[in-house]
Image (cartoon, rainbow, N blue to C red; front, side):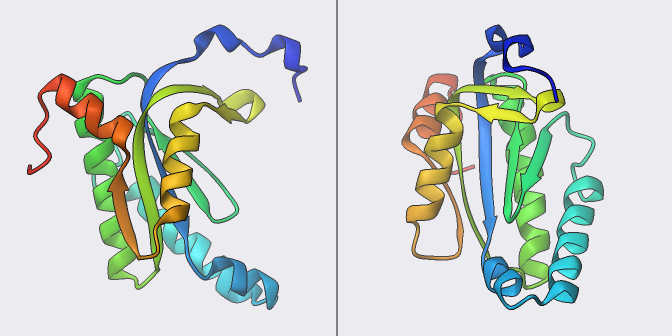
Length: 157
């Protein structure tokens, strides 16, 4: 692992970030239902890596039951890329009866895959909103809605 001092922190920028948590996953792990854990991971990762819109230049990582999608910047084009990729992923989760909750935000975010470092206000914002939802589904944070307005992206589309 690279030392912290070698991480290029100056690459922090505004990006679109979506955080999606799988529900019930912790229970599978707690009960040591490893076949279920493996099955869920295989299904979810296959849908994310090879599903609809997987050719969009949207990056993603996961840790435990949290999947994080993010773009290179906060442009309108990047919004449509992450929105379509996230929507396709969510549709597959629904189709395969995998419960989830998630949120998309926009703002400052640092991503450095080589050091496995992912941090920033946009991620915190999306994660906190996702965790506060008491329902299955996906939403936009206030920061995402504000940026959409700035870009002239209509929410009803």
